[in-house]
Structure formats: C-alpha cells, structure tokens
Length: 522
Image (cartoon, rainbow, N blue to C red; front, side, top):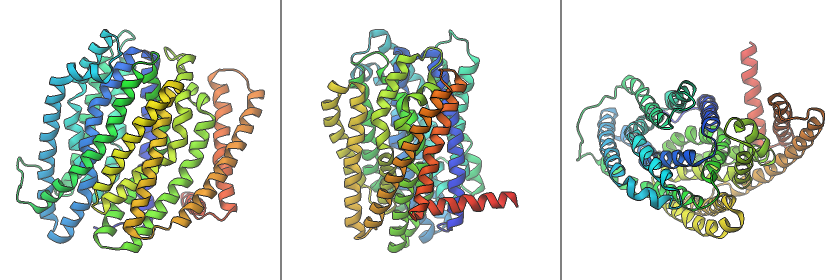
C-alpha cells in the first residue's frame, strides 16, 4: 500500500470531484424540489432542525472515526500486517455500531425535551412536527456510522471511487420521493427517504470491503493495541466534531426567534455556499489526507510540509474565484436554483442575504477542513479540539453581537469571522509543530489569487450588466443566459491572469487539463 503517485492522486481527485459534482447536482435537485413543495415555512424549518440533529450526531461519530482510523490503520498495516489490521476494522465497526445504537435510543427518548430547548420560539405545532421527524430520521445513525468506518478503510487503501458516490446514492431516494408522492403528501415521506438513502449508501460500500478481504463477525478484540490507540485519539476528535455541531444548534436557537423561514434560509444558503468547498475543496483534502498520514507515519517531514503547502495553495487557487462569483451573483444564483412553487421572491432575498455573509468564508471553510486533517494525520487530535472550542466560543460572541442588527445575516457573518480565528490558530500551531510550512510562498500565492479572482469578478460583473440589458426578464432562459457567461468570465479571467503572473497552481491546473484533453483526442 503506497502513498500514491502524483498521477494517481490527480486521478483520484478527478473521480472524487466528478462524483461530488453529480452528488451536489442531485442534492440541488433535492433542495429545489423541497423548496418548491414546502417553501421556506415552519414545515421546512421543522424538517431542517429534525434532519440536522441525527446528521450532526453522525458527523460527531463517523467523522471522528474516519479521521482517527486512517493513520492508525496505516500504522498497523505497516508494523503488524493486514490480518491484524482486519481485526482492528471488525472491532472498530462493532463499537461504532453500538455507540450509534446508544445515541439512537437516547435521542428517541429525549426528543420531546430537547427540541423545545433547541428551537424555543417555534409554535406548538412546529415543535410536535420536529419531534416526530427527529424520531423518524434517527436510525440513519446506524447506517452512517457503518459507512464512516467503511469509507475510512477504503480511503486508507486509496480506494476512493465507491465512497465518492455515497452522497449520490444518499440523495436518490429523497429525490424520487419528492417526484413521486402527491402534492398533499406529508413531509414525513421525505424523512423516511432520508433513512433509506443512508442505508443504501452504507450497503453499497460492503462489496468493496469484501474485495479487500475484510469481513465482519460479532467480536471486539479488547487487547488490540491499535484499538486502544484509536480510543485514545478519538476522544478529542469527538469533542472537536461535537463542539462544531453545537454552533448549528445555537444558530437554530437564535433563528427560531426571527422571521418565519429564517432557519430554512440559512439552510439553503449553507447548501449553496458549500457547493464550492464541498465539491472541490473536500475532494482535494480527501485525496491528500492518506498521503499526509503515510508521510507522517514514515516521518517524512519535508514531504509532509510540501504536501501541506501545496494543498493550501491549490485550495486558494480553486476556491477564491468561486467565492467571488457566489458573492457577486448570490441573488441570481438563488433565484435560478430555488425560486419556483412555494419558494417566492421573499425567500430568495432571505437566502441571498445570508449568502452575502457566508460567501467570503468559502476559502476559510476549505482551509479549516484541510488543516484539521493535517493534525489528525500527525495523530494530534487535541489541537483541532482546542480550535473547535475556540470556533464555537468566538462564534457565540460574534453571533450574539450581530444577530440584533443583521438578523440571520449576523449568524452567517459570525460563523465566517469565527472560522477566520480558528484557521489562524491552526496555522500558528502547525508552524510551531513543523517549524516551517512555506508561509511566505502560501501568502504570495494567496495574494496573487485574491487579485486575479477580484479581477475576474469585475469582468464577470461587467459582462452580466451588458447581457442583462440585451436579455432582460425573469424567465429561465434569460436567467441562464445572463448568469452562466458571467460566472465563466470570473473563472477564465482568474486563470488567465494567474498564468500571466506565473502562478504555480494555475500552470499546474491548465497543464493537467490540456494533457487530459489531448489524451481524449488521441
């Protein structure tokens, strides 16, 4: 098992990006159908709150398992062989399922008590609906916990394809349900389909595990030193992911006292804002993480520093023009994506307003995820936990200060500002840990990418205005004709100027795209 050649890493990143694009497209269709059917109302507010509770619990468990398990698993394979690593997989899987089952039972029993605490200003009927939907979706914990362990094992073996398509499979039942059920159907149908999607996503990974020779049996090897190490490392990671999820519940708490639809507007804004770093940023981080873990396990400090710096520079090159495009064209984007059926112009304005404050943080969100993975690769799980605690603490302060004057936009801005503090802390700690991380080169690239992305934004904004005068109106064709060329101009000008300035990342991206196009023509 190797750390992966540059060519294989690029291929893996391409596969993950393609799968993520398809998943996000289907996710957009899901959100579009949900918005058209239910709008931005207390019904969708209840659904979003109920969905996020088990999903947040899943992230606390599954994300922790994935991040801790990969470096420990690599270490066990290198030092004790594949058979010992297989026993570790069985033990971790069984303990994860038991923990998920305990969370499920606890969530089911306590739902009537903690829902009014999370959203105290909901009307009574919205409280009751939230409790019911929460209980319906809690079983997804079991399947997502299983899927998390399977994803970690496959990624550790540089098998990225099957896990990359899990999100696509998760969304399929929800989309089919929204397409098939009647207009008067209860939103509980959507909740059931969410659980079905989680089950399908986990089950599709099992054949890939079998091909690696990894099976299942009802056993836990308590004497396994690898399991003990996972246990020691995972506690800070669970704290990290758990603390981060707390801020979402705090947002729901504050937003439940704002105008109807505020929670839904924040949810739709997060969905749109997460497209860039969720598709491209996460793909880069996912592919580089096993390499970072292997370099850390082999004590290849120089190679690890190079991978870290390259990842940060690549993220800034890719994410900054996306942030600029989303910031400038936030309302046309939301209008094109969601404004139909029950999702009216008022809901578009609510969502676009939140995007105004989320979009500037796109690069920060991508960097935060990648930097956390760097520490986890080094088997340092405490520093990300401290960063997460600071993220939530500063977030609470910022949001309490800003929610009054800016309403739900203050919650979005508070999140962006808190992430800036968290990223600064992580970079500082990583520099202390590694002594040198190529900070000057990273800052130079960041400055170039900021300038080229801003220039691209000006070009796109000017082109949008020109086309708007030639193609006025709110029809679908007019929206597409205005928006797509403008967004394309942002990217084209950004890449062209980056090449003109001799930017390393721009040259790398264009070179690889050219070689791939040449191979296809050949």
